[in-house]
Length: 366
Image (cartoon, rainbow, N blue to C red):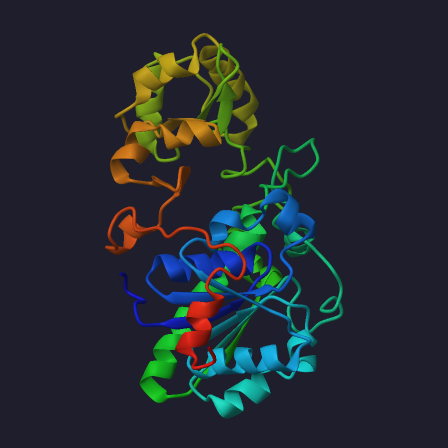
């Protein structure tokens, strides 16, 4: 089911953004065959379950890429597929004889998706890295956090998944549209540094316009403004406040009991932001998070409770929209309702090599 039904994808098992891209394609209906390393998974992947849910809805075949017979299976899989996804360091696929030149020559409509941190070229291309380093190089990490504290990494959501996996998925789908129209495949070179940099486009525009200072924690959207910040409540829990527009700010003041208070510092004067923040800090600390949410829920004050990951799965709005679904006893985010796919159609997570016999039979190799 889904808009990508009928699309066949071959994915080389990896960690993080590559499997996330494959998950998105599978959630949208593509038939994704994951090539696992024969012998199982080790390191972080095995010990932390670092892919687990990212492999939902896929099928798995376990192969040894150093074995000629298994390489023949890979080529047979690719020959009948629309998309290939790989996340190795530059040059690895070429050394295996599975580079884009070879595979596109034998299968011209193929969309060859490559997921790396630094990209296929550049002085850092062949070096190791992780999300935190990629977003550091783009300036995104340096712009995140309080002004007097160390930069605060947003887990690996910004680089690996936002700048990496989502951009790879977008590139793959765009290339699929082109291939279906022209019969011509292409390479999609998705680098996390590239995608993360694109995510900062609006901020660069504000920098150019003089509406953003090249310092973290002093601007409109980075907690510099007291009406766009996070506040601690009496119970130690937090509220997020994003009352940017005048009418939303008015609703915020109304909920706080500050409407018409002429002693309130001017929000349009950044020099008065510290004093305004002090007023807000004192007020929010006077009630619990739930008490404040009872005040602001359903208003246009742009206030929201800061839920934990588990609390978010129980939120009334998230439940009604089916944001999370339970599959095989595991609660997880569900992309399906956003794309007119049957709600709750998220697939199970396959064990490595679980579908070997089935896939070999489809290829006529049983």
